[in-house]
Length: 313
Image (tube, rainbow, N blue to C red):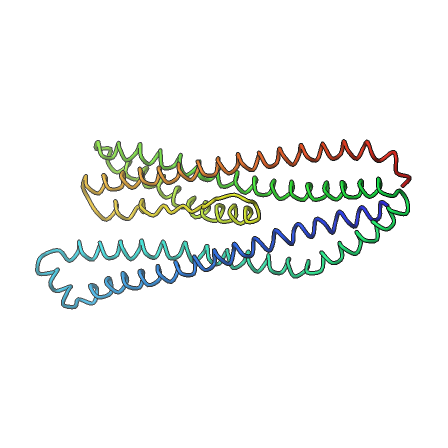
């Protein structure tokens, strides 16, 4: 019967994978709709902000007014800052949307390759069931059903491990961002106390590192959520850390700008801590599921051992 067992194991793994892909595709399509809407919104914001910059640089009536009151440079700087921030946000969402499209194409292609796995599994299972009945009767059929459950549990265990790995990657990045924000906070406090250019540059260096990692975290959280698509769990993973763009502190002098950056750092720290807590909670739940799978597998193997000697296969 070993040739049946091998085929059934492979086909059941394919059926489990097909189910996982169907759930992942549904999740990715939802993500695509969300990010598409967000990209359109941010693109419009960027275009409007850039138009404000262009109008001032063209020296129109608004530019004339700000020149008269001596605020031209300040207003142009502010508009450039807002345009830059809008472009950074739009580019980040556009890159994430491209990643979603790529993942969706890959999942759809793999799903297409598995379109008939369920019918093939049913056919092979019927063949083995008939052979088992001839060889060992009811007891052998019980073993067949138990072995089928073990194969399913192995597939489930594999999917859970993939979800755990995705969550651990996201958690590591979130911890890295938290470290960068803590360092930026310390340098920001020193900057307020008169630390000078060195403290200012050190603060922004850590903010740059955090900002770079935020995009990675967004992608990792999205993939973690996709891995969880066929797991019964309530998990909404989104992190948006937009407040600490370094341009605010570069373009505005004085203690108020520095306090504003510190306030945004604190807000970002809260967001990252909340995200870490969510990831920890879900990873704990996944570990519980894996423990249940391991226990059930061991119990079934014990049952099979008691039955196998009675079946002449």
